Length: 183
Image (tube, rainbow, N blue to C red; front, side):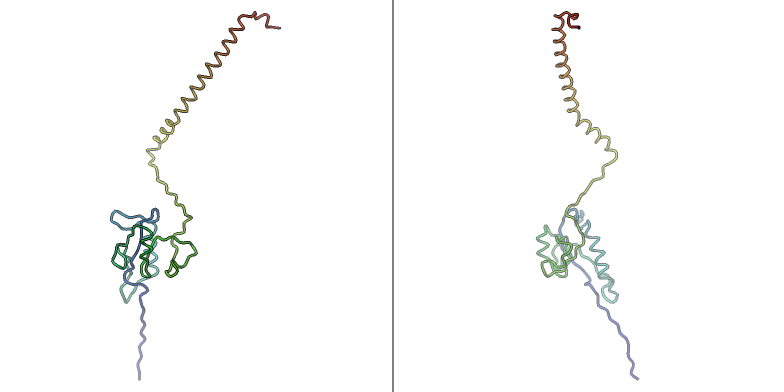
């Protein structure tokens, strides 16, 4: 009797290491003091790679993302967008790149996936320390002080002018007999 065995094999969906190609582009991507990228993109890229690559059970295991060097063993961080464009490769994750929501390829041959949809404007605010609020109020009041002084000076000047006009008219009326001015 002929005996047969069922053999199932599986290939890994990703290589053991995914290399990156990135540039600092605040507020989307900044750099830590240790040279590692931080911001919106690194967590998205990590979770995307974990989901897409999975765990290669019979192979290398989980795919590691290398944020420090590209596939050519050059530094992964580039100084501008043009250097990132120059080093785009099929086996390298390059980010951030400018593109639209409905774009599916980049430069006509590379797969493009929009990760962050932005209206084009990022509004960043800084939380104020509650202890500094009285100082901000005092500064606002002191900034208005020249206008208060100007208003008081104008009122004083108007009072002098009205007093001068009224006192001259009373001075003229003193030459006349008040009884003659009545009906």
